[in-house]
Each structure stands twice: as structure tokens, then as C-alpha cells.
Amino acid sequence: MAEKKNKLGSAKRFGARYGRTVKHRLAKVEKEQRKKHKCPYCAKSSVKRVFVGVWYCKSCGVKFTSRAYTVSKRKLTLKKEEITEIKEMPKKEEEVEA
Image: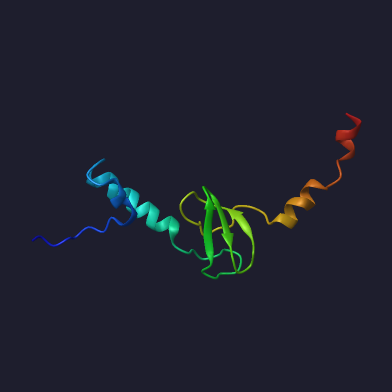
């Protein structure tokens, strides 16, 4: 019997449908998105994907956005406290007069 070489992981659920290349690409993406990633705020490997582009770190409790399937190396959004500070900023006098 032939030796199995490919590791499809969760893409095995498609069986004989959709072709080899598509299933291998899907398996690679799903494996990447389901692993634990390094947090850009506390540098621990405890970040899990909540849904597309939204990630949550269990150790520091921060929820942030990043790429769809992986966490990018740079911080893309502000923390919750910073967002509320921006919303509460007073309007400029020029905008009020106009």
C-alpha cells in the first residue's frame, strides 16, 4: 500500500471534491488561523481568533484587529481606553462657529 504524504488536516472533510491544490491551500490557511499567536501587546502566545480580523489575548485581555487569518507584527488599532478618549475630545472652536 502507498504511503500517505499529504497532511490535509481539517480539509479532509471535503473528501474527493474540489481538487488537491484547493484543499492543500485551505488546510494551510486553517492551520495558521487556528494556532495560538503571539500578542503584540504582551508578547505571550495566547492570542486566539474571535472572528474574521478580530483577535483576543487571554493573558492581557485585549481585543484587537489584525489580518483575517494571522496576527500581523504591528499594532493596527487602538485599545478600548484610547478609543473612548478620542470620542470624548471636545470640538474645535472653528467647527462650532462655522
